[in-house]
Length: 367
Ligand code: NAD
Image 1 (tube, rainbow, N blue to C red):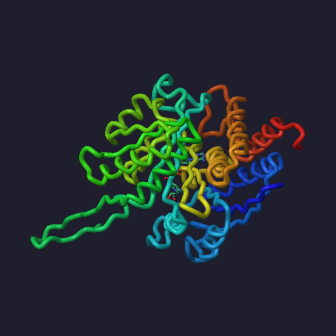
Image 2 (cartoon, rainbow, N blue to C red):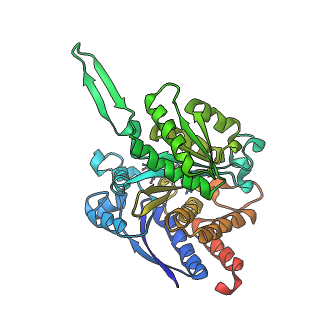
């Protein structure tokens, strides 16, 4: 029986609509090939929503997102909205969406594709074969803990305060996502904390260690965050899946991402306890190249593959999309941001057309 999914599309601003169009075309082909039916519903977010409806996250958009199987977002933001007060900023719409959907787990893979080895700032022998995933807790920790603020003491001195706090339940739920993720990958999980100094990290380590008994097939290790940062640039190949708190994950996922050297290639997924996940590229709306057909849609395509794997549990369809991206690069095609001598540079639309051809070629009877 054909499996049906309702997908909310949020193209957003800048290059968003261009790269989203590529993803949707590919999903239609994948749907035909894998006997999946995608029902698309499009909504406004960010600057586009602000211009049309006066707010960056309209209630209609939130409703459509809540009532679907997965949300695919491109990017939000642009120079014209930069000076607005915070509640009206495009970013506020995106942060609001993540919060309202209860997305507590952020998954960011960093994979070095052999064809883009030269894009990394590290030596090829260090990064070759890197394929890791950072699972970051997204709705707790020091970004949300109370008390927080800038206070004035009795002596009249200003004091800035943030609080790093995690409950056992918060640690357990991100831990479970991480163990499940490691299970779908190489079966190794490294938990990163600062348990030698922070009590909150000691609880983190205790809970993750306890959880490991439910996942005997996953090999668990622990690292302090300072060492983890060093190891990521020293020998990143040792990592498969990393799980860590909000603050540490913010920093480590950027280090991991930059191992690859190309922002136009990086996807992400944000998952909640129930309800739809949100899948989006790591990059922004690239207003400098918007409307020029120069955007690299591959991060959007790889985010779509993450949606298929982690949001809809359609791993085979995800693998097909990922294989198409690899075949595209293998054939020597590049977008302008990842071009190198001897490669053929294509625009956003032509990249999409080539990916569709590759999908058809992988399944000749699908045309
Ligand atoms: P950016 O990621 O949009 O762009 C940084 C640089 O990378 C630019 O030179 C851009 O042309 C290039 N780039 C980014 N994505 C690319 C792609 N797919 N193909 C080719 N080149 C690409 O970051 P920025 O310039 O700091 O921010 C621009 C706007 O995007 C801002 O309004 C910012 O708030 C917003 N933003 C949104 C998100 C999001 O939607 N999640 C994330 C970051 C920034």
